[in-house]
Image 1 (cartoon, rainbow, N blue to C red):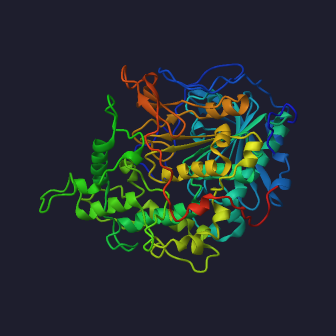
Image 2 (spheres, helix red, strand yellow; image 1 turned 90 degrees about the vertical axis):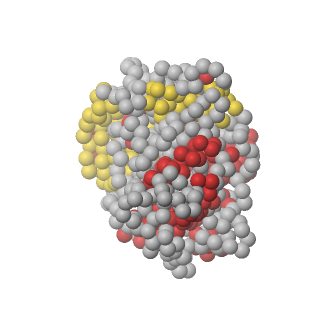
Image 3 (tube, helix red, strand yellow; image 1 turned 135 degrees about the horizontal axis):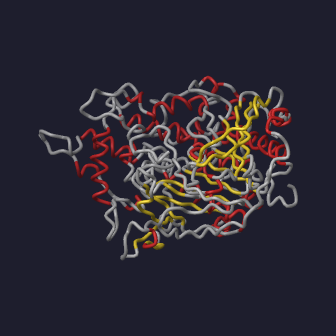
Length: 595
């Protein structure tokens, strides 16, 4: 298990149009040091961050040869059939510098592939488990900074200060046959990351002769769900957790949420039709939204600080009757589709909203490849079954509905029937979801949590993350939550990065400073960079619900000229049909119990 203060125990970011598996690509700036201290901020602009430098932790050298780790027995963790398949020194190039790792690969039964990277000469007694995205099924290279989300300019990462570990969560490839296997469903839901962490910790002790002093989980999207799952199910595994754009509401996200995009987009109103709204028109829509709601006094950047204050109506750009050109306006059908995507489904009887939130104003360009096709309205029609939203619903189908009285289809989901939650989504809610707001055990153990979400997220509405944060406050009390958790909303940033905002952020420095030294984060600087990775602009973000406000003078590209502004929106999340999923519950388990 985790060592908590164990003196006693021990890609430039993606373009807005590249969508299906967008992750924050992290830019590297290295710092040489014999003993690695805290992560720091890079660039030439004042950071405004409250994270102080960590007191250096001594670099610990290995006490055995890397190859000998191949003989470590891990059957006590994964069960019979668990084995290490290789252990060899590899070299990774990070920010132009070479870092050597003892890279250990293996399998935890029945089929959890894992990889643990142990620094040969730079380990600072820290460990980080790295989450995966989507439905996982691939094994990220833990030696690469691109696998380490939210670590922009962090020398601890760039110089190999962490032991890192990754897993495919019990399956590989794009086949969905694994979703019919109870043990593999459990491994994806919660077990895979936990047993990989236990394995990494056993390897750490074998290689360095001691346990780590601090352990962290860093993940985004499903990795964010995995992060919250760890806080809820295994509250002593990690000292600090960073959960970005968490798909915590897995049952809802991959049924009603993405399914609604399919139905809203279809010329037939179901999965047999073609798309209505295409990339070129999403850009037209976005331009109009930005013109109506973007920027603030003295800052013509088009970013929307809090999209909930934007009351844009797509009908305002509907093409005039009889218009000979529709290239710069929306047809009536396109207006209807956009309005449905923004508004989400409602219960036909009560009028209650079915979702906590939908894609927000300002996210329209990012819809391309997810809610809308990558092609234009002048190109050949595209079936809605080719959209990411349809494909993710299909991939998650068995995970969500196994055990339901009947197996609905994307066309028969209860978009307008609140009883769909009880009848179809409840059964596997305590297995797959990570929405339990009671983190008392994690807090009691001294854990720290940073939640992060881009306001322009095209995959997961940031309003669900706000709902979770509010549920934590309602369950544990706002003062208690403030002692161990923070939420940051980043304007203009898409799913786990990208977009028109400031996607480059170092939350690793924040979580390490907080977990190791009690330095709670406040302002966190975010960055834009050019094609050469040079910083072109910076801007702070503040703990929710505060927003960044331009001071009124000086270069608005410089984060030093911004200050903390008051909240622009103060209403709690509206009433919606699935809110009970954000109350305390007892998690369920399948298959073999994890140690």
